[in-house]
View (spheres, helix red, strand yellow):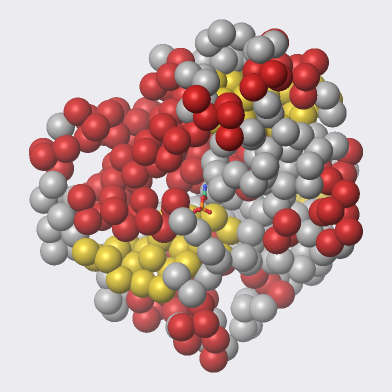
Length: 358
Ligand code: CP
C-alpha cells in the first residue's frame, strides 16, 4: 500500500512514469475508461477547493470508478469532534483510496498512518501539495520538453505557498536548475525549505524582491496568490496583497518562450490581459491536473507493495513540542509529539507532521 503525502514519496523514475502515463491518457483516453471500474475514491476536503477536488473526482469518473466524500467539514462528523485518525479508519470501510485536503499541516500523514487504503495529500495548510507539483511538472514537461536546464522564478507568497514548497522539492532532483525566489521580506521561503532542500541539494538560488528585473532571465515564471487565509495579522495581508501584479507590459521584457504558471485561484496577481498571451499556461496547467491525477490513482490502486504504516526509526517521540498553530499535533486526540533531528551540528529538530522547527 502506498501513500503520497509529500512529493519526495515518489522517486524520480516514478514521477517520469506518472508523466508518461498521463501523456498516454491524453492520447488514448478510451484505453483507460474502465480501469477503475468498481473502485471508489473518497474526497475528504476540510478546506475549500475547486481544481483539486473536482479534478480528482473527474479523474476517478473518467477511469470508470465512483466518488464519495465531503467538501465541507461542517457536513461531516468532524464538526462533532471526530479525529482525523478515526475518520480515516471509517472511510477505509467504504472506499478504495482517499484524497484529503486540510487546513491542518500533517493531517494527511496522520490519515495515512491510520487508514488501510492509500492516502493522497491534496494540500495541507501551508505545508505540501504534491499533486499540484505533478500537475506543474507535467505542464513544464509538455511546454518546455524537459525538466532539466531551466531557470524558474517563483513570485509572490513563498512563505505560505505550499505549491512552491512542493515544486522546489521536486525540482531538486533535476539537472542544472536555477531558482529565483521573488518575494517581499515578509513572505520569503521558509528556512526549512532553504536548509532541507536548496542547501542540502546544493541548488543554485537567489532571493530578490524585484520581479521586473528578474523576468528576462526566466524560462518559467511561477506566480502565486498572497494567501489571505494563512495570515494571523489581517493588516499585514492588506499591506502585501498587491505587491506583485504581472501585466501585459511587464511580459514584454520576458523571453519569447518563457511560460507563466500559476496553481490558481488567481486574485489579481496576473492581469486578465495576460491570459491571451501564448506564454500564459495556467489554464493548460488546470487541464493537466486531471490527467496526472488519473495516472496517480491508477498507480496507487495497482501497487501491491506493502509499505509499513509507521514513522521511521529516527523519530523521537514526546521530547519536543511543536508550536506551529496549524500543525495537526495541536488538535488531534492523543497524537504523540514526534520530531526528527535534521542538523546534528546545529541541533535542529523538526516536527515530522508539519516540518516546522521545534
Ligand atoms: N491549485 C489548487 O489547489 O486549487 P484549488 O484550491 O481550487 O484546489
